[in-house]
Image 1 (cartoon, rainbow, N blue to C red):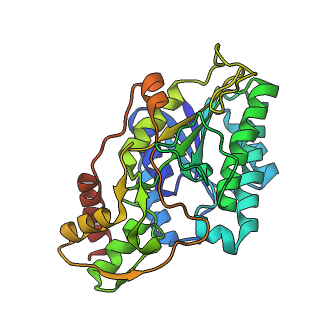
Image 2 (cartoon, helix red, strand yellow):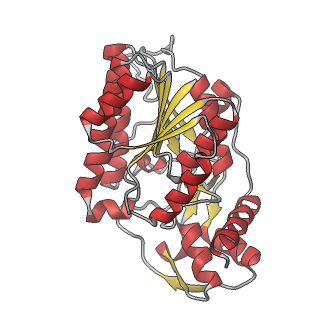
Length: 335
């Protein structure tokens, strides 16, 4: 395969690109290298990817329609994995326009590139945040997701709807992946595991939202990558049993699919922090805070469809995943 990975300097994009290269594919990695978090971390990831002769990096803004059209026309990708996005629920409250530019306009340019250049399969990152006000656990992709809690979630839901329209109009196979709280080595500095680890090591307080009563389906990065790789090779097809009188939200009569990728196990935030404390060897200083706007109190992924269609169920324990992250953190930051 010749694969375009957008957001290749990002957390998931880096790990996915490295795996695809190891599997023998050609990868073109796209990233704008914005300063939402420390650019040096992104550059360090790219330095590793550039060690492979099968990797090419391009610095392009997804919202630049001409640059995107030129890239697709020149490279003739067989597959595309769109991971580039303006991330972060809380930041979407402060800077909503950034989310429309990257997550909506940018995604349209990806769809157009795939449409005009006969891409065999588009796989794109959605998010567990699309479930919004849904509270029936585990969260099932067969349930509607019409009540987002943040603009970030709304843009991810819009990606799924836009993808379906292109699957319908242009017979473009598309698969959306709803990721559940991804963590692991090279993780984003704005994510809880990074912030908790940094502050516990430095003996500074950690902000614990919803007074610690958060429950999350934490998914280790290697499990996410394994799921993505399998889905890329499993081109979306129409569901022969799809019924317009009882429409299934995560499949269609056209080549369109949506899957959850999560660990299918809920962990209390308190247990998560206790595991970090144990691995670091220090106790946290807790700063309890109320729920933040746009957040949800709990997530848990139903992954039955992923297991059925690609034969994979994430199962990495938080003890293993947190240990691997902290080993990386101590090495990278000499902490």
